[in-house]
Length: 200
Image 1: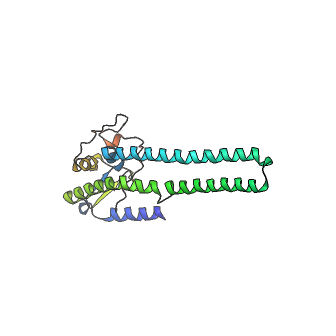
Image 2: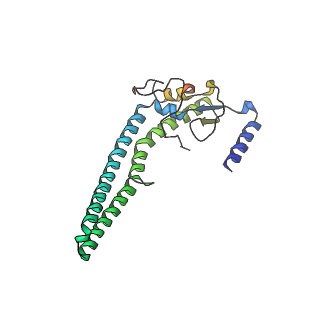
Image 3: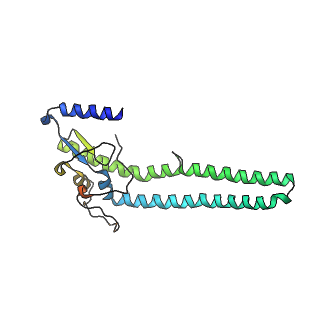
């Protein structure tokens, strides 16, 4: 169904006289890789994720130790003590699961932190694209890094560097020594950035 809609949409665009169209495309992954705030936000999110994951793993290790001790001791325990120990283990397991859900479930703490750190940067990129589209009278700007499939794009229609400049940044002037992003987004290979510009 989705492919059919895309095909119909492309057919409609192709049916419009070329002189009535003014289109361009961007590579949002490339743009974001040139935004220092985005890299800082990603690093912060990675640190938070690691810290929270360790917190959960510590609780799970404690539960595992409690269970192993219980298995060794239960033959010596009264029925009342066995029930008490089992209840303690179950309560710990429930607490760990609730913490994991609170941290990483959809709409949880990590999602909220991601929205807090990433959304303003996405909005900044979107606003820059919108500003350029208005200024240059583009009827449509596609994102080659998004869900839209761009089978071919002539580099002269790629306005990614223009968007970066519109944001007051210099294309390719990254402080990340580990980055392998080049000035030309067409030369970019696989990307590590999961964030897409999804603003409507």
